[in-house]
Amino acid sequence: MGGQGNVAATRLWNGHATPPTAARSRAGIAGFLDGIDPPAPGPVSVLAVARRAGADSPAPVPQFGTVAVKP
Image (cartoon, rainbow, N blue to C red):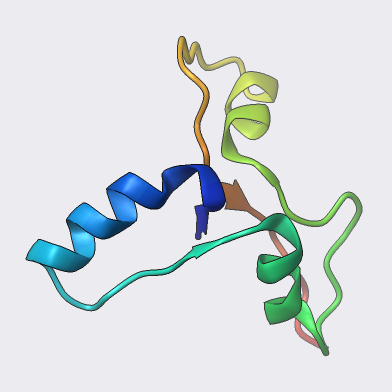
């Protein structure tokens, strides 16, 4: 899922590849989680997850990710 900070990359992708993608905010991504049970904290920056796992990322990553349990 792409973040709003990734608008230029989204335009480039949509101009040259399929399927198209859309830049969304954290709240926009959270809308996809209706009816499922995401553990706290919900959608987080992919960079935050990478750093927690010990990966080294020199630049911000404008993308969000989450996990959820489907009841």
